[in-house]
Amino acid sequence: MRIRDVWQPLPSALRRPLAFGGAAREPDPDFDPLNHVRLHAPTADFHTVAGRLMGRPLRRGRPPWEAHVLPGEDGVSFAVLFKFHHALADGLRALTLAAGVMDPMDMPAPRPRPAEPPRGLLPDVRDLPGMVRGALSDVGRALDIGASVARSSLDVRSTPALTCEPSGTRRTAGVLLDIDDVHRVRKTVGGTVNDVLIAVVAGALRRWLDERGDGSEHVAPRALIPVSKRRPRTAYPQGNRLSGYLIRLPVDDPDPLARLASVRTAMDRNKDAGPNRGAGAVALLADHVPALAHRLGGPLVGQAARLWFDILVTSVPLPSLGLKLGGNPLTAVFPFAPLAPGHSLAVAVSTYRGSVHYGLVADGHAVPDLDRLAAAVTEEVRTLIAACRS
Image (cartoon, rainbow, N blue to C red; front, side, top):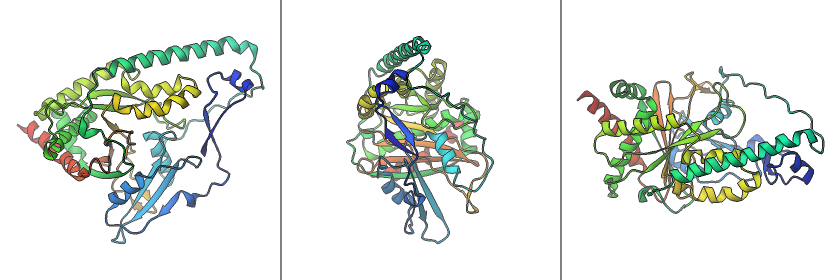
Protein backbone atom coordinates (compact mmCIF):
# COMPACT_ATOMS: atom_id res chain seq x y z
CA MET A 1 0.00 0.00 0.00
CA ARG A 2 1.05 3.58 -0.63
CA ILE A 3 -0.27 6.98 0.48
CA ARG A 4 -1.98 9.32 -1.96
CA ASP A 5 -3.46 12.78 -1.50
CA VAL A 6 -7.25 13.05 -1.46
CA TRP A 7 -8.90 16.26 -2.65
CA GLN A 8 -12.49 15.13 -2.65
CA PRO A 9 -15.23 16.81 -4.72
CA LEU A 10 -18.02 18.64 -2.97
CA PRO A 11 -20.59 15.78 -2.85
CA SER A 12 -18.10 13.48 -1.14
CA ALA A 13 -17.03 16.27 1.19
CA LEU A 14 -20.69 16.75 2.14
CA ARG A 15 -20.88 13.09 3.01
CA ARG A 16 -17.77 13.40 5.20
CA PRO A 17 -17.45 17.09 6.05
CA LEU A 18 -14.11 16.68 7.81
CA ALA A 19 -12.41 14.58 5.09
CA PHE A 20 -11.62 17.26 2.52
CA GLY A 21 -7.87 17.60 1.92
CA GLY A 22 -6.90 14.33 3.56
CA ALA A 23 -4.95 11.27 2.43
CA ALA A 24 -5.80 7.64 1.74
CA ARG A 25 -4.07 4.30 1.31
CA GLU A 26 -4.23 2.60 -2.06
CA PRO A 27 -2.52 -0.42 -3.68
CA ASP A 28 0.75 0.34 -5.43
CA PRO A 29 0.30 -0.89 -9.04
CA ASP A 30 4.07 -1.16 -9.52
CA PHE A 31 4.85 -2.85 -6.19
CA ASP A 32 7.97 -5.00 -6.27
CA PRO A 33 9.35 -6.45 -2.98
CA LEU A 34 12.89 -6.17 -4.34
CA ASN A 35 12.49 -2.39 -4.27
CA HIS A 36 11.95 -2.54 -0.50
CA VAL A 37 14.11 -5.46 0.70
CA ARG A 38 17.79 -4.77 0.20
CA LEU A 39 20.91 -6.85 0.83
CA HIS A 40 23.99 -4.90 1.92
CA ALA A 41 27.69 -5.69 1.99
CA PRO A 42 29.07 -7.51 5.05
CA THR A 43 29.79 -5.25 8.02
CA ALA A 44 31.57 -5.51 11.35
CA ASP A 45 29.36 -2.87 12.96
CA PHE A 46 25.62 -3.21 12.44
CA HIS A 47 24.83 0.02 14.29
CA THR A 48 27.05 2.15 12.05
CA VAL A 49 25.20 0.94 8.97
CA ALA A 50 21.84 1.19 10.72
CA GLY A 51 22.50 4.81 11.64
CA ARG A 52 23.31 5.68 8.04
CA LEU A 53 20.16 3.96 6.80
CA MET A 54 17.99 5.58 9.46
CA GLY A 55 19.08 8.97 8.16
CA ARG A 56 17.53 8.32 4.75
CA PRO A 57 13.87 9.43 4.57
CA LEU A 58 11.35 7.07 3.05
CA ARG A 59 10.23 8.24 -0.38
CA ARG A 60 6.74 9.72 -0.53
CA GLY A 61 4.51 8.05 -3.09
CA ARG A 62 5.94 4.60 -2.44
CA PRO A 63 4.83 2.03 0.16
CA PRO A 64 6.14 3.54 3.42
CA TRP A 65 8.43 0.75 4.58
CA GLU A 66 11.84 -0.81 3.90
CA ALA A 67 13.78 -3.86 5.09
CA HIS A 68 17.60 -3.99 5.02
CA VAL A 69 19.55 -7.24 5.44
CA LEU A 70 22.99 -6.61 6.98
CA PRO A 71 25.35 -9.64 6.90
CA GLY A 72 28.13 -9.83 9.46
CA GLU A 73 31.75 -10.12 8.42
CA ASP A 74 31.98 -13.42 10.35
CA GLY A 75 29.79 -15.04 7.70
CA VAL A 76 27.37 -16.32 10.35
CA SER A 77 25.57 -13.45 12.05
CA PHE A 78 23.28 -11.00 10.32
CA ALA A 79 20.83 -8.24 11.22
CA VAL A 80 17.62 -7.04 9.60
CA LEU A 81 16.64 -3.40 9.89
CA PHE A 82 12.95 -2.66 9.36
CA LYS A 83 11.90 0.92 8.65
CA PHE A 84 8.23 1.88 8.91
CA HIS A 85 6.81 5.35 8.51
CA HIS A 86 4.98 6.33 11.68
CA ALA A 87 1.84 7.04 9.63
CA LEU A 88 1.82 3.33 8.73
CA ALA A 89 2.47 1.77 12.11
CA ASP A 90 3.05 2.36 15.78
CA GLY A 91 5.12 -0.10 17.81
CA LEU A 92 2.55 -2.89 18.08
CA ARG A 93 1.51 -2.62 14.45
CA ALA A 94 5.17 -2.51 13.33
CA LEU A 95 5.80 -5.70 15.28
CA THR A 96 2.96 -7.43 13.45
CA LEU A 97 4.27 -6.29 10.07
CA ALA A 98 7.85 -7.36 10.86
CA ALA A 99 6.70 -10.72 12.22
CA GLY A 100 4.98 -11.32 8.90
CA VAL A 101 8.34 -11.97 7.23
CA MET A 102 9.68 -14.10 10.09
CA ASP A 103 9.24 -17.85 10.32
CA PRO A 104 5.62 -18.82 11.06
CA MET A 105 4.61 -18.47 14.68
CA ASP A 106 1.45 -18.19 16.71
CA MET A 107 0.23 -14.59 16.62
CA PRO A 108 -3.16 -13.22 17.71
CA ALA A 109 -5.59 -13.55 14.82
CA PRO A 110 -6.69 -10.17 13.50
CA ARG A 111 -10.27 -9.31 14.21
CA PRO A 112 -12.40 -8.98 11.08
CA ARG A 113 -12.99 -5.40 10.07
CA PRO A 114 -16.67 -4.62 9.44
CA ALA A 115 -17.49 -3.81 5.85
CA GLU A 116 -18.57 -0.24 5.20
CA PRO A 117 -22.15 0.04 3.94
CA PRO A 118 -22.51 1.25 0.33
CA ARG A 119 -23.03 4.99 -0.01
CA GLY A 120 -24.62 7.04 -2.71
CA LEU A 121 -23.14 10.13 -4.29
CA LEU A 122 -25.09 12.42 -1.95
CA PRO A 123 -25.66 11.83 1.76
CA ASP A 124 -29.04 10.78 3.07
CA VAL A 125 -30.77 13.86 4.45
CA ARG A 126 -31.65 11.82 7.53
CA ASP A 127 -27.93 11.52 8.29
CA LEU A 128 -27.25 15.27 8.17
CA PRO A 129 -28.14 16.10 11.81
CA GLY A 130 -25.87 13.33 13.07
CA MET A 131 -23.07 14.45 10.74
CA VAL A 132 -23.33 18.02 12.03
CA ARG A 133 -23.34 16.86 15.65
CA GLY A 134 -20.31 14.69 14.96
CA ALA A 135 -18.45 17.56 13.33
CA LEU A 136 -19.21 19.90 16.24
CA SER A 137 -18.23 17.19 18.72
CA ASP A 138 -14.89 16.72 16.97
CA VAL A 139 -14.23 20.46 17.02
CA GLY A 140 -15.08 20.66 20.72
CA ARG A 141 -12.89 17.65 21.50
CA ALA A 142 -10.00 19.17 19.55
CA LEU A 143 -10.31 22.44 21.47
CA ASP A 144 -10.38 20.55 24.77
CA ILE A 145 -7.25 18.54 23.93
CA GLY A 146 -5.52 21.62 22.51
CA ALA A 147 -6.17 23.61 25.69
CA SER A 148 -4.80 20.76 27.78
CA VAL A 149 -1.69 20.60 25.60
CA ALA A 150 -1.16 24.36 25.89
CA ARG A 151 -1.50 24.32 29.68
CA SER A 152 0.94 21.43 30.04
CA SER A 153 3.47 23.17 27.79
CA LEU A 154 3.85 26.19 30.08
CA ASP A 155 7.15 26.58 31.89
CA VAL A 156 9.01 24.46 29.33
CA ARG A 157 12.77 24.68 29.56
CA SER A 158 14.72 22.80 26.92
CA THR A 159 17.91 20.99 27.81
CA PRO A 160 20.65 22.15 25.40
CA ALA A 161 22.24 18.71 25.12
CA LEU A 162 18.93 17.22 24.00
CA THR A 163 18.09 19.83 21.35
CA CYS A 164 19.84 20.61 18.12
CA GLU A 165 19.42 21.88 14.61
CA PRO A 166 18.59 18.82 12.47
CA SER A 167 21.63 17.60 10.53
CA GLY A 168 19.90 14.78 8.65
CA THR A 169 22.39 12.27 10.07
CA ARG A 170 21.72 9.46 12.54
CA ARG A 171 23.62 7.28 14.98
CA THR A 172 22.20 4.19 16.66
CA ALA A 173 23.30 2.10 19.63
CA GLY A 174 21.91 -0.88 21.50
CA VAL A 175 22.08 -1.98 25.13
CA LEU A 176 21.22 -5.44 26.45
CA LEU A 177 20.20 -5.90 30.10
CA ASP A 178 19.04 -8.87 32.16
CA ILE A 179 15.32 -8.57 32.93
CA ASP A 180 15.96 -10.28 36.29
CA ASP A 181 18.02 -7.26 37.37
CA VAL A 182 15.10 -4.98 36.55
CA HIS A 183 12.67 -7.20 38.49
CA ARG A 184 15.06 -7.24 41.44
CA VAL A 185 14.89 -3.46 41.65
CA ARG A 186 11.12 -3.39 41.13
CA LYS A 187 10.46 -5.95 43.86
CA THR A 188 12.64 -4.01 46.29
CA VAL A 189 11.19 -0.52 45.84
CA GLY A 190 7.81 -1.15 44.16
CA GLY A 191 6.35 0.34 41.02
CA THR A 192 6.33 -1.21 37.58
CA VAL A 193 8.98 -2.54 35.23
CA ASN A 194 8.36 0.50 33.03
CA ASP A 195 9.02 2.83 35.98
CA VAL A 196 12.41 1.20 36.47
CA LEU A 197 13.27 1.37 32.78
CA ILE A 198 12.42 5.09 32.63
CA ALA A 199 14.41 5.78 35.81
CA VAL A 200 17.40 4.02 34.20
CA VAL A 201 17.19 6.52 31.33
CA ALA A 202 17.19 9.41 33.82
CA GLY A 203 20.27 8.07 35.62
CA ALA A 204 22.09 7.32 32.36
CA LEU A 205 21.44 10.86 31.13
CA ARG A 206 22.88 12.23 34.38
CA ARG A 207 26.11 10.25 33.95
CA TRP A 208 26.36 11.14 30.28
CA LEU A 209 25.80 14.87 30.78
CA ASP A 210 28.35 15.06 33.60
CA GLU A 211 30.98 13.10 31.67
CA ARG A 212 30.67 15.19 28.51
CA GLY A 213 30.89 18.42 30.51
CA ASP A 214 27.32 19.68 30.05
CA GLY A 215 26.47 19.08 33.71
CA SER A 216 23.30 17.66 35.25
CA GLU A 217 22.60 20.36 37.84
CA HIS A 218 19.02 21.71 37.59
CA VAL A 219 18.40 19.46 34.58
CA ALA A 220 14.93 17.87 34.47
CA PRO A 221 14.08 17.30 30.79
CA ARG A 222 10.53 16.58 29.74
CA ALA A 223 10.11 13.02 28.52
CA LEU A 224 7.20 12.00 26.32
CA ILE A 225 6.09 8.45 27.18
CA PRO A 226 3.82 7.14 24.37
CA VAL A 227 0.75 5.19 25.44
CA SER A 228 -0.95 2.75 23.09
CA LYS A 229 -4.71 3.15 22.70
CA ARG A 230 -5.14 -0.08 20.77
CA ARG A 231 -7.45 -2.73 22.09
CA PRO A 232 -5.75 -5.75 23.69
CA ARG A 233 -4.70 -8.66 21.46
CA THR A 234 -5.02 -6.80 18.19
CA ALA A 235 -2.75 -4.67 16.06
CA TYR A 236 -5.54 -3.38 13.87
CA PRO A 237 -6.56 -0.99 12.40
CA GLN A 238 -3.57 0.29 10.51
CA GLY A 239 -1.70 3.47 11.34
CA ASN A 240 -1.09 5.02 14.74
CA ARG A 241 -3.20 4.64 17.86
CA LEU A 242 -1.09 6.54 20.35
CA SER A 243 -1.43 9.15 23.05
CA GLY A 244 1.21 9.80 25.67
CA TYR A 245 2.21 10.84 29.16
CA LEU A 246 4.58 13.66 29.96
CA ILE A 247 6.97 13.55 32.91
CA ARG A 248 10.08 15.38 34.02
CA LEU A 249 13.07 13.08 34.27
CA PRO A 250 14.81 13.76 37.62
CA VAL A 251 18.27 13.92 36.04
CA ASP A 252 19.44 16.48 38.62
CA ASP A 253 18.74 14.19 41.61
CA PRO A 254 21.96 12.43 42.73
CA ASP A 255 20.08 9.63 44.57
CA PRO A 256 19.19 6.72 42.23
CA LEU A 257 16.32 5.48 44.42
CA ALA A 258 14.94 9.02 44.73
CA ARG A 259 15.02 9.27 40.92
CA LEU A 260 13.01 6.06 40.67
CA ALA A 261 10.52 7.29 43.28
CA SER A 262 10.04 10.54 41.32
CA VAL A 263 9.41 8.64 38.09
CA ARG A 264 6.95 6.32 39.82
CA THR A 265 5.02 9.24 41.33
CA ALA A 266 4.85 11.08 38.00
CA MET A 267 3.69 7.99 36.11
CA ASP A 268 1.02 7.23 38.73
CA ARG A 269 -0.25 10.78 38.44
CA ASN A 270 -0.43 10.50 34.64
CA LYS A 271 -2.28 7.19 34.81
CA ASP A 272 -4.82 8.66 37.21
CA ALA A 273 -5.46 11.57 34.82
CA GLY A 274 -5.64 9.32 31.75
CA PRO A 275 -4.00 9.59 28.31
CA ASN A 276 -6.27 12.39 27.05
CA ARG A 277 -4.50 15.17 28.95
CA GLY A 278 -1.10 16.79 28.66
CA ALA A 279 1.34 17.34 25.82
CA GLY A 280 1.26 13.64 24.94
CA ALA A 281 -2.36 14.01 23.91
CA VAL A 282 -1.36 16.13 20.92
CA ALA A 283 -1.30 12.89 18.89
CA LEU A 284 -5.04 12.56 19.48
CA LEU A 285 -5.75 15.82 17.68
CA ALA A 286 -5.39 14.03 14.35
CA ASP A 287 -8.65 12.20 15.07
CA HIS A 288 -10.61 15.35 15.90
CA VAL A 289 -9.56 18.08 13.47
CA PRO A 290 -10.44 18.45 9.78
CA ALA A 291 -8.05 16.70 7.41
CA LEU A 292 -7.21 19.98 5.67
CA ALA A 293 -6.26 21.62 8.98
CA HIS A 294 -4.17 18.57 9.81
CA ARG A 295 -2.40 18.82 6.46
CA LEU A 296 -1.62 22.52 6.93
CA GLY A 297 -0.83 22.41 10.65
CA GLY A 298 0.99 19.07 10.79
CA PRO A 299 4.38 20.42 9.65
CA LEU A 300 4.15 23.24 12.19
CA VAL A 301 3.33 20.81 14.99
CA GLY A 302 6.25 18.59 13.99
CA GLN A 303 8.69 21.49 13.96
CA ALA A 304 7.42 22.61 17.38
CA ALA A 305 8.05 19.23 19.07
CA ARG A 306 10.88 20.69 21.14
CA LEU A 307 8.38 23.10 22.75
CA TRP A 308 6.39 20.18 24.22
CA PHE A 309 9.06 17.70 25.22
CA ASP A 310 12.81 17.19 25.20
CA ILE A 311 13.16 13.44 24.69
CA LEU A 312 11.02 10.50 23.61
CA VAL A 313 11.15 7.37 25.79
CA THR A 314 8.91 4.62 24.46
CA SER A 315 8.31 0.93 25.11
CA VAL A 316 7.60 -1.49 22.27
CA PRO A 317 5.89 -4.78 23.24
CA LEU A 318 7.34 -8.03 21.91
CA PRO A 319 5.97 -11.60 22.08
CA SER A 320 7.43 -14.00 24.62
CA LEU A 321 7.76 -16.66 21.92
CA GLY A 322 11.11 -16.95 20.19
CA LEU A 323 11.24 -15.40 16.73
CA LYS A 324 13.20 -17.01 13.91
CA LEU A 325 14.16 -16.03 10.38
CA GLY A 326 15.18 -18.81 8.02
CA GLY A 327 15.54 -21.10 11.02
CA ASN A 328 17.96 -18.72 12.74
CA PRO A 329 16.83 -17.64 16.23
CA LEU A 330 16.47 -13.93 16.87
CA THR A 331 18.90 -13.09 19.68
CA ALA A 332 18.44 -9.30 20.02
CA VAL A 333 15.68 -6.87 19.08
CA PHE A 334 16.60 -3.21 19.26
CA PRO A 335 13.63 -0.89 18.67
CA PHE A 336 14.40 2.53 17.17
CA ALA A 337 12.04 5.45 17.76
CA PRO A 338 11.60 8.36 15.32
CA LEU A 339 13.67 11.44 16.07
CA ALA A 340 11.54 14.59 16.11
CA PRO A 341 12.88 17.74 14.42
CA GLY A 342 15.02 19.69 16.86
CA HIS A 343 15.63 16.71 19.14
CA SER A 344 19.04 15.10 19.46
CA LEU A 345 18.04 11.81 21.13
CA ALA A 346 15.20 9.25 21.28
CA VAL A 347 15.04 6.08 23.38
CA ALA A 348 12.99 2.93 22.77
CA VAL A 349 12.86 -0.13 25.02
CA SER A 350 11.69 -3.72 24.49
CA THR A 351 11.72 -6.83 26.64
CA TYR A 352 12.35 -10.08 24.79
CA ARG A 353 13.00 -13.56 26.17
CA GLY A 354 14.54 -12.57 29.49
CA SER A 355 16.39 -9.49 28.28
CA VAL A 356 15.76 -5.77 28.06
CA HIS A 357 16.78 -4.15 24.78
CA TYR A 358 17.41 -0.41 24.70
CA GLY A 359 17.54 1.12 21.22
CA LEU A 360 19.10 4.60 21.07
CA VAL A 361 18.74 6.93 18.08
CA ALA A 362 20.56 10.25 17.97
CA ASP A 363 21.40 13.07 15.60
CA GLY A 364 24.80 12.10 14.28
CA HIS A 365 26.35 15.55 14.65
CA ALA A 366 24.81 16.48 18.00
CA VAL A 367 25.61 13.17 19.75
CA PRO A 368 28.92 11.77 18.49
CA ASP A 369 29.37 9.98 21.85
CA LEU A 370 26.21 7.86 21.76
CA ASP A 371 28.24 4.79 22.73
CA ARG A 372 29.07 6.53 26.01
CA LEU A 373 25.38 7.02 26.76
CA ALA A 374 24.82 3.33 25.98
CA ALA A 375 27.48 2.38 28.52
CA ALA A 376 25.85 4.69 31.07
CA VAL A 377 22.60 2.71 30.78
CA THR A 378 24.37 -0.46 31.92
CA GLU A 379 26.15 1.40 34.71
CA GLU A 380 22.90 2.87 36.00
CA VAL A 381 21.32 -0.56 36.41
CA ARG A 382 24.31 -1.67 38.50
CA THR A 383 23.96 1.49 40.58
CA LEU A 384 20.27 0.79 41.25
CA ILE A 385 20.98 -2.79 42.26
CA ALA A 386 23.73 -1.67 44.64
CA ALA A 387 21.41 0.97 46.14
CA CYS A 388 18.72 -1.66 46.71
CA ARG A 389 21.19 -3.94 48.52
CA SER A 390 22.29 -1.14 50.82
